[in-house]
Image 1: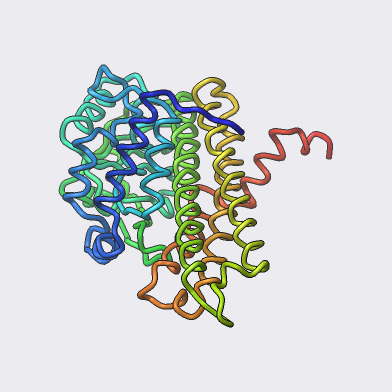
Image 2 (image 1 turned 90 degrees about the vertical axis):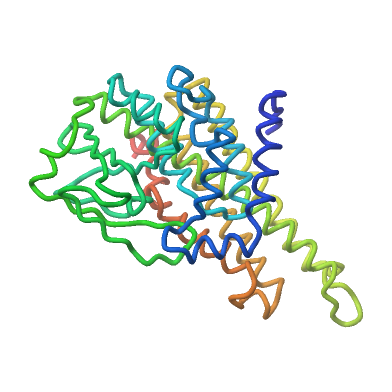
Length: 353
């Protein structure tokens, strides 16, 4: 697919790439991953200063009023460096829910994100619990969908909520922090109902579709970085008196990596354009984008490790960080198998069966 950026989109892409270069070195990323928060607070503040957390929020609450394409450009750039931050939970999931709801409290929280970088977490509650909730451990507020209602729960301190148990999990991908939530009976009394009915379901569905699109864009950036680093390495590594990049078998593997990256990029930006122009297509297109990008990153990270030889398996090398991101992404916001079923339903395979 041929995709041309507008002048404004090109500037956003350049700003995001410059930010990733300045804040996404291997040392900075590893330090952020190892910190108690799981991200660097100064980096998060800098993200706020250039407006990335409010990309999707409307202008009447201080947001940028931009769309899915601009969001994807930001996440592709940051994903190339695996930069840890609350941007996905706050700037995509939370912002999408808040932008969809017509309630004064929703507008108030959205305005606070824009003005003071408040952090949010979003969860769908079943049987008084939610699994694998992103960034709940540092959230200033929770947005939960429960029994057909959207509830807002303000934190007593970051990650601490009356009537909610937040259990941080140890995950393979250390660049993201996920938690399990358990709700006590007193939780409802401590929360504010923002909306109820079908509008809540639609708002949360849309938020997680946007989340799938965002992590797909991240994966495209990460897969491209795997390819770029591997091309550089095979031109330097010598065996049998020649750079290994000159061997036909290595060229074939690099070509396969490139095809996967380009196919995933096309899927991501087609989905992003669909979100803006044909929103009813977004659920299926976001599923397709996440599926393509997940497989592209898994393949690219695996080949990166293989072609780097023994060094690619070591903790000191970043290749394993990309591979772990690929494995973590494959189950975040729905497994690839579940997304296959969604795509099949969209194209009518269930009806044919």
